[in-house]
Length: 236
Image (cartoon, rainbow, N blue to C red; front, top):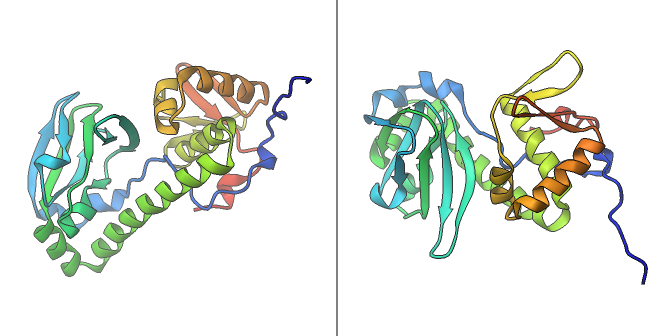
């Protein structure tokens, strides 16, 4: 039988995502919210780890620095997302007093605010804006997980990487003079492969096709992406 090949990549063929998964979610207004008056200051050095199992009933607000989160099982440790200033994590566990198989690794020196479930509830009761932002954070993570699962079923690796990079560009990118969006966050092929549950060889092959399609390029260690199908203008 003759060999079969995938059709050439075209961004216009991708169904518009309901929500960009994998992207950084950070609400800068959280840094000015009354929730900062609750809880205790917590500092991390580069490489320090917060294990959810060690902080039952607590959540954290990122004040400065950056962290990555991992979903841990007895067999795997999967990179899940990134957290920057304005991000809150473990809020669902704190509110529901449920355990979470998660770890958070400091990518740089970090200043956090450790907030108990009771303190978080108090802050949400005191300020409707805090209530809204915490609920939005929880909802975002639920939608992002759903979109990751959905994308794994209906999109090939090229499309998933493209959607991933667009999502990062939406929150952590800036437009360049030649019409590209430079992603301010430095991602590696290993990062992308871990988040997509594919190996680095598969990621590299997919990126080469995206380069050829002129929708992704790499410069000075950072990825640039072009939104040729206007996906960023039509989704949240």
